[in-house]
Length: 422
Image (cartoon, rainbow, N blue to C red; front, top):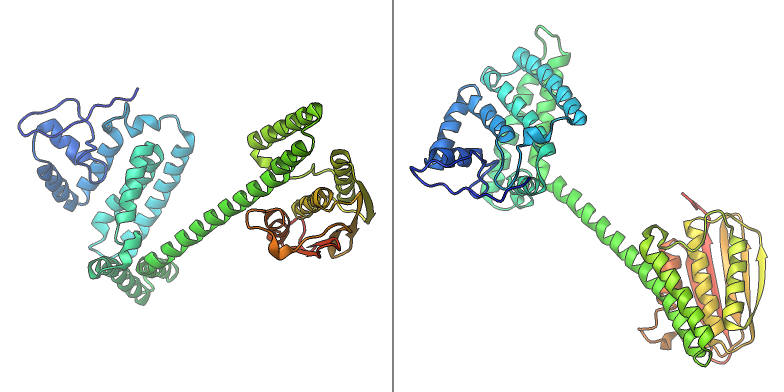
């Protein structure tokens, strides 16, 4: 059960129970929580922890143990108890401890003398951090992410300001120098392989620390670009679907206003389609079942247009192919072109021609009706822009619409089969 108890330090007034303090936390709030429990200044506890850390890293390990074992303000149980019974975490810890033992053994052989007494505490603390991350709550994980973003090496802001650059250059230079020195002293009791490996690792880590802000910014930019592209594609699919489905149905209802039965039928059919589309997002952009073919879908378009609009569609299909994402997008654009011909051309029949070749699939929709001027189409009419041009071009195809007032309309849709279905 989660509690909302919050501790605030008061000098000379010990508080119960012992909890990690959230309000005054720098990392995990262990020192601030102990200060509240003892009624002393937080600075004193932090200073004592820092001094203990100088004694072979004892203070650092003690802090990590307290982070695991002491409950955080606003939470009902500590991280250690939350991780009980998680076998996956236990396996990860075992492997990390094995890796720590190997690294400690290597450092004891070839590491600098000043590093050896503190290596165990630093490496063990890294293991503790992994365990803490896996067991932390959403609020604490957000706090840790903010700390990571503020670090001179990991934060994007580290590329600005001489102090931030110094914080990055100093550890990078140290690691590079240590790596070069170890590489120069290749040999010893273990031969050349292990020292070369350790020195090379130190050198590589130093270079990574030096260049961290740039490659982290690149990774973040790529991730942001991908999210923006996915949202744009989803929005395009939504706009195309609403236009193809809802607006077309509204046009049919307007034409059948004198026939209540037809209006009710169209409204019920549109309601069922919208419910399916809204509550089955995996169907977005899909126009047919994957077990159907290009030819069968063209015949379905012919049937739907003749049934709903009372015009005759002269269909010719040469060849056939199984459906994939690209062909489905081509068929959706062809359906829109056929609906436009049925609604606006003013003719009693028009033709649809589909052809499957080895390297491309094409659909042509032609009518000899009233035609229109493509340049004069208002910006708020997205039938051509979103449902035909954008839909086909987004999948790597081409859409050409030729129309002359009084001389009909010709829509040519082509999709390359190179890489189709990949």
